[in-house]
Amino acid sequence: MNKIYYFDHAATTAVDEEVLKAMLPYFSYSYGNPSSAYTIGRKNKMAIDLARQKVANSINANQKEIYFTGCGSESDNLALKGVTFASNKKARHIITTKIEHHAILNTCKTLEEMGVEVTYLNVDREGKISLQELENAIRESTILISVMTANNEIGTIQPIKKIGEIAKSHKVLFHTDAVQAIGNMKIDVDEMNIDLLAMSAHKFYGPKGVGALYVRNGVEFKEIQDGGHQEKGKRAGTENVAGIVGMGKAIEKAYINIDEYNKKMIELREYCIEKLQSNISNLKINGSRDDRLPGNINISFLGKESIELLLKLDERGICTSAGSACNSDSTSPSHVLMAIGLTDEEAEGTLRITLGKENTKEDIDYLISSIMEII
Ligand SMILES: *Cc1c(COP(=O)(O)O)cnc(C)c1O
Image (tube, rainbow, N blue to C red):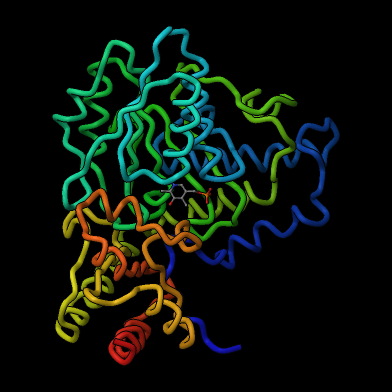
């Protein structure tokens, strides 16, 4: 097999070898149902709770506040619908942003069809919301503020702590989609006044098909799936034991060396950006230069079609993304790039490069010389 040069870590990551090893027994001899009373069942329940503790530790939560789900999208659905359905207010209002992932935006659409009112905050050219606009949007009927920690396309990190303070001072709940942020930055749910937080294992070298939702103790939310009593009645369905164990291992590993990892990612990112800028004219780096995920590069090649560039890079074994992976099968320009004010032409020429632990400087040299050849 030819070498793959993988620069799409915001779309997904490869399962870490140690994570895979930790998961393997749960596909074979450790097959007991965690709800069963005999030993091989109870042992699996313990394995889940150990993973729960690891997830909780990574965000300074209590293990009782962690609910395992099937993915980041499910966690977002459960947060928004769960809080809305638990509210007994007559009029219900949610505040979110124009640059959220579709797991949030489409959930809001569904809630709007049910009579919930939603405000979509604007962002500036860097992709940041205005705290003043947020505060002005809060009403008597506001039940929830949902702002993503970091954006999956442009990598911009929002002022989460300040948003948490505003939410708290108005007694409104605060949910954050931290799917891109977990494993790439430190998050403390107490210090940041976060009430609910969504994450997904496959974004930090864990397996696909498992996520978690943090819900602060005392926050009321209703289950959205009926069935058995798993996850304290909040998420019915026999637990994905192997996936949950893998998620626990992956999150533990991600935070052991986070400072070192981030330093390496930022070095590679800056190396890549500088090399691009000095070798290619007519390009524009999108998003914030300061408040940005360490491994995110989002560039518009003016006058180019990024989808063509992506396909030609693919022929050379290089994986990148045009805008966002979730948009790769649609031709409409990314809602995020539109919200930060790019022209259609700029948006069409936009390529996302997201770095990860297996990338090296040599890989980046190959990427850049390939881009130069194609352009
Ligand atoms: C990937 C992603 C999701 C969805 O997570 P899945 O586990 O793929 O469902 C949600 N929000 C953001 C910001 C993401 O990057």
